[in-house]
Image (cartoon, rainbow, N blue to C red):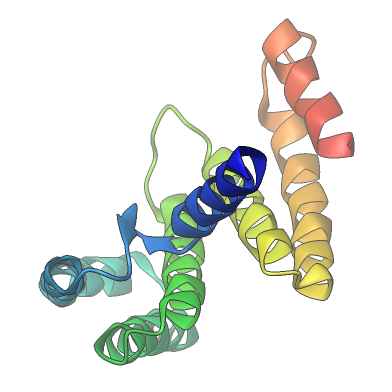
Length: 168
């Protein structure tokens, strides 16, 4: 009986951990209100960032993709549909990772896109969407092939570890 109780608690903990958005669980009304506030603030941030990105050359398709994802996330949060809200949040993160190529930083844009793709693979595998996970894995390999020639010392242990991890 104690073993069954422990297994049930473990299953509930796993469920709670996977069913979250911004690390906040779905079943508390106050948390949904906070998630809604966070999402609404994304509109303000996006509206201030969008003109700068347009000046830098992002396409209307890229703007539309992010806008649609933001609208979807807002809708699904209002509906308290955590899974669809998570997918919309991933789409937004995916779009933002694509925008990094418009800014020069010490971290290559390809590495940021690799991070976004890795998160997507993990998320969609957790949803048993193996087709989407495979699609993202293929994109990940393409991004890594773009990154490899940019790295000054691609023989470093960290870079080799990344390469082996992506091959797995």
